[in-house]
Amino acid sequence: MKLQSLVLAATTFLAMTTAFAVPAGTWSVAAGAHMVDPKSNNGTLADGTLSVEVDDDIRPTISGEYFFADNVGVELLAAIPFHHDITLTDADGNKIDAKTQHLPPTLSIQYHFDGYDLPMNIKPFVGVGVNYTTFFKERIYLGNGNDLELDDSVGVAGHVGLDIPFAPTEAFRIDARYMDIKTDASLNGNDIGEVDISPWVYGVAFVKQF
Image (tube, helix red, strand yellow):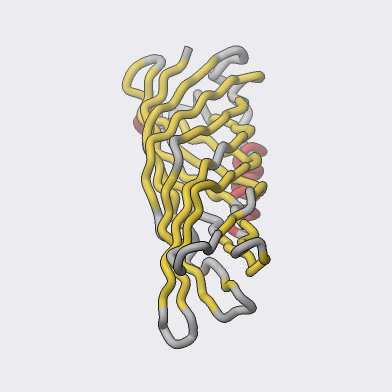
């Protein structure tokens, strides 16, 4: 529902605007940091006997965008691995700790509202695309010989943000993404359920156009 609302708002805004300012052929690079903030309820495992809680993490990120049409670009987001602590809790309140690392490269098509004389010359943008998340270095603290695995995930992603220019080709960016990330978990080769991370990802970055 969050992603549907995001796409609906973007579509409505696009239908109301006609001006163009960022020419086709422009490149931009954004370097900054983002926080992956998982949803509050991350599901249950082992036939519902264990509730799952995944914590947040902040890491440096970089993205590149190519404008293949006026004000319309394709962007790829990359980052160094995010680290997440995972807490499994049974009905009696007993806890099992686990952890994982992941990389969530995300490819989006974006529209930039540039050239509309907005306050402070801000330049909003919206985007929608696909996220691929690969998990690695999973570990569960349940005694020696126990192997936790999380499958890779593919899902839709939404993106909204503001560029605040401070030079003709440079800007400060504030943005937020919603990523549909769900992963099947297994313990010692046996399926134990699905972990629903589906985070909001909040960030800031320095943007340079070429």
